[in-house]
Length: 170
View 1 (cartoon, rainbow, N blue to C red):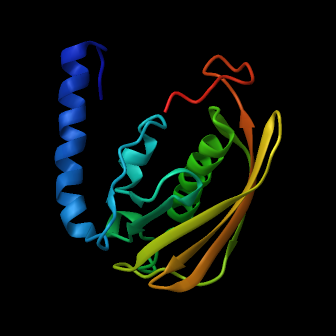
View 2 (view 1 turned 90 degrees about the horizontal axis):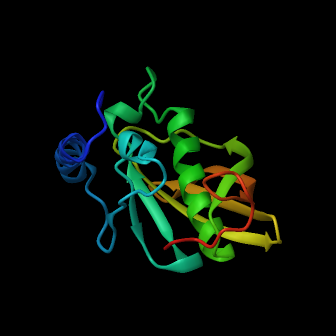
């Protein structure tokens, strides 16, 4: 918790997050070719990850290992963990395809099978349509190679102040 936002407080907070993810990254054992996702989406993904990625642009593939902190009392990934991951994946693909900052407007999900603790969850997404104000996307998540979850949604082009159509600052 940062009570006094200053550069030194921010640097210490970032160091704590990186230290926590250094342990999680080792425990998460991503497949070869994946690198740690360094979020720019409000730091929420840092708290629910770690997430990993490979590829570029609309060919982006993201993944995460289901760890204990992702699980519910049944020993499988909590639905909210899968939805947060899908939201991050789809948001990245939408923003890259439209070359604009985008935020979730709708997200419809289907849970097809559980992802056990220790499973590698991998997500692939596609842009269905990129309009002037909205980007339509969908994704499929696999758990250890088996289809486990699907989602589709609409992302709205925005600016940090809420105005439409600001270029994405990649």
